[in-house]
Length: 397
Image 1 (cartoon, rainbow, N blue to C red):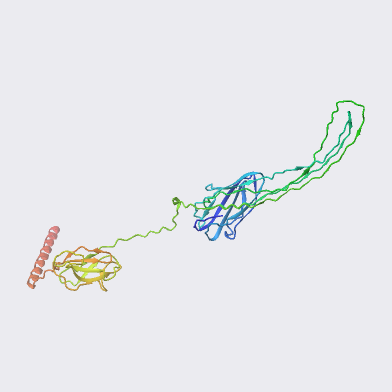
Image 2: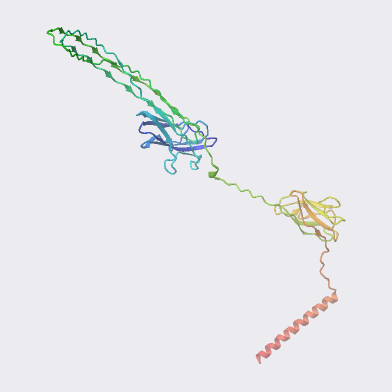
């Protein structure tokens, strides 16, 4: 019997070594009501002298503490203690059970057992019927006729049948010892033959005639009937030891934890701007992105104290700040020199502060300045062209 210890078992193979000097394997069956995969479940056979083996498999997971695997039948051949041993020879005769994929092996343990075979003791009852009468008077001539008829018939029928049900499996914790009790009925009647020996010491001339008639008739009938009923049941309690050294991980799940991105101001921090652009952690829901001015004290206070909230929004899948449109609308234009920063309330992160500056203005030329610039450029071009022509003329000469 099998104790799966809460595990889902799909099948297994059993190799049982037995004492073939005292036992003979007669037959066996697998429990096909549970182990119902026909092309894998086999009938127990004696695969080699003294070893019974078979395999089992189920169409669905087997889980229980007392699952019948199979039944093996043996006949007793000689008296004594006959041992049963599960074999755990790695890669050969290995008793092992597997998961439902029939590939991943559980660490399987079994408890060995034994059975005591007792031969019945014959106790014959001797009942001689013999009473000769001797009365010799000096040199008697004795002619006893002793013809005991002795025909004891002893036909003990001794056929103990042992049917141990062995259930290998996952760490059984008991060692059953079975002692079959044989109760023979054996009372033979036996009549021995007596031959009296007489040695007279004198030689008288007497000739008595003694003819004792001794004709015992003995016909003892011995028909002991030995009908032991022996059905030992080996029910080892199996406790599979799942050793942490061999724990196959078939589907490792790796779940990386991303680090939230700290918000950064990317544009709009100029005088008069009413929209601020930034990058932060993706998919921050509005209004968890908050834009602040540090206030008169010029120090970040985490959005408290004299910090002024200028606008709120969120981020898209790329981490770009916005609130329906790119950038976060501000409640007022920015002032030169003020310190602004962003707080991501969802991830508890704050950006580095940025100082609002004047926009860089490209210089504008007056019409007169523009005309002078064009003239200068023209003179430079003419001078360069003349220089090239002079060089060509000298080269031609």
